[in-house]
Image 1 (tube, rainbow, N blue to C red):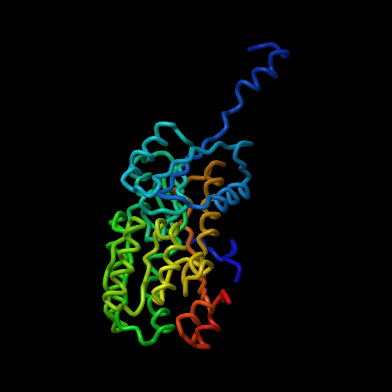
Image 2 (spheres, rainbow, N blue to C red):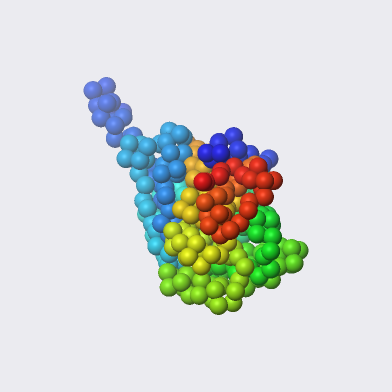
Length: 326
């Protein structure tokens, strides 16, 4: 399928008359400013599309201040504080748990619209999904919560798997801990052994694959992270070179040669962040805008990669795939 549609998300619960034209112009409100905070490079076109659907076009009736940590998560608090100092009207975080937490820590008054893959209630971003209650709301696209399902699909595709490498980015400590815990629980239920591998640089990824080969791991499970998303070509290339079946959270990996993915359509999630940002600019309160969650997920399989790895994709799995790349 081409992607998730909007309907695939569900909301849980004095002067003379001659002076009047000049006075009216003087009293016109300044163009609203949206602060966009990201932890690494991310395609913001879907966010701007959603903002446009809500009636706001950058440079026409809204200004946007961009801040990116460029992969250095330790810079996020400083960047969030900078947006607060600029007194932006809304802080939008299209797709980043660390950036969302930094924004929340920086202000309790400026509205925040987030896109996170983890439970926003457990993260402390909102009081509840139906009634956020504070200055933040947004989209929860369930990347982390799908770890067990994704690992199960990998095991179904590669039934002989016994030992699985789990690639994580240690600079995102909170998400790494929760994701590893979820994967460990799922692996135990499937009778799999896991080996956690850390990578936060290009060199670390190369080193991780060297360990995978040396330890004769049967497969690789990549924990969702913006750094890995930006290195998807490197990951898919190394997985193919070393013949290691690999599962990802995003379809983008499969498009560049990755074996399989299972998760939310992140582009549409970013679009929804843009729509919510527009609604807040129009006066709606984050406290009263329920956190949105996806109602469907997409499974993508690269048949060319499967054949190169000598894998026969089960017909039952192929029938459930939303996207098959040949």
